[in-house]
Length: 136
Image (cartoon, rainbow, N blue to C red; front, side, top):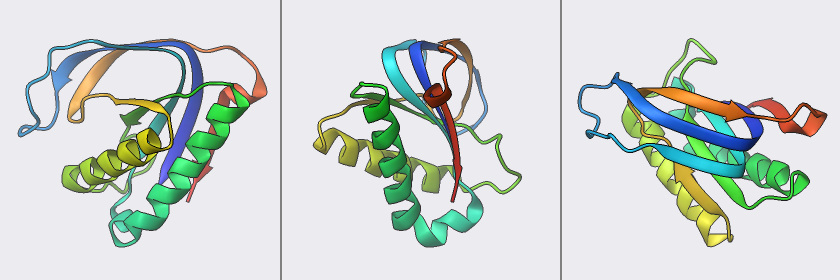
């Protein structure tokens, strides 16, 4: 798994182009403020260790949320950080599991629509703990 985390004062998106044929139709825009946005790349080999990578991802997101004094997290599937890619079904399962676990821990969590290229708006401050990358 590759995980790029950004602290965003504002993160907004609009579904632009459907890239996965069987993805549900989505037309709604999304907005989060004072949020950690996780750009999540699930690799093919992660399917065999889904529980472990999910737990590590959650711990990293919670840690960075604490460092930036927020309880808002956006999970964004971003299959551009590695050549190895997991199936959309595996990614969906991971994101759903992570969202439930984070919500159970008191976080406000949303997901960008899987299977779409999105128009993005991102306002992120320039300090060291506003951008963190992890590979596991």
